[in-house]
Image (cartoon, rainbow, N blue to C red; front, side, top):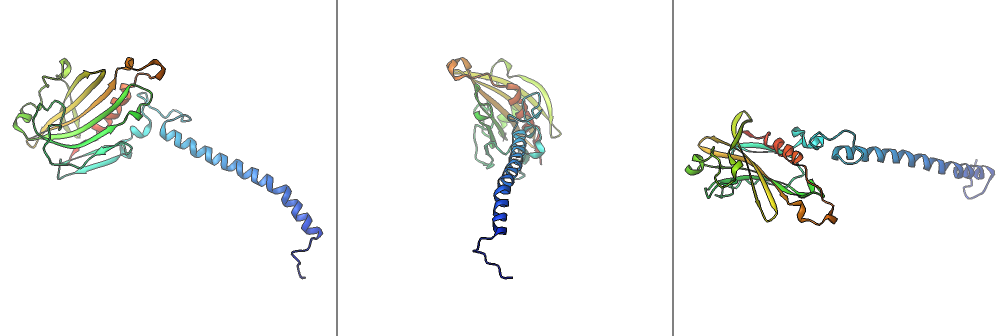
Length: 246
């Protein structure tokens, strides 16, 4: 039988009517299914990010699982310059060129001694939005300078009354002496935790400084709240805990 496609027949009318009725329902069904998929995907993303919609994803210190699961982080290793490895969240800026140029910034309170600043990790203000948190900076540095080695495990005289060693810690199987100190100026606060050890004739320093601002310097209309020191410290301690000599 020859089919005339351009001719209107009773069965073409029936087919058109069936399609007219069925297509809206099919479209609605597909839309609902797509919405559920999109909702599921968004929920998974929010759970991973620790945002609204996540259920029980934050630790008591306020960190979402990713910032506590160091196995998921970026690992940086260099056995030539520095001779260590360290891991950190992939979403934070890092300077890890392992420059061998001499610098007095190899650790806080270096007091003019020369050393090498191998790595700098920065936690930006956006990590604690709508708070008085400014940033946090973690560095890894070392020095073979005689004066630096002599004062490596001593408190820094210029870092205030809390500058003395507060404890010892094992990091990557190596004992470190822990120093905590604070500094302030122009409405800004700087709290530093410094881990130091002597290895192969070098003074190594792994340390982080948390920078915050005096919250009362901001107008109340800004709606700022105090940042969570526990959250920032927990994050930085997690990074420090990944350090290993190679």
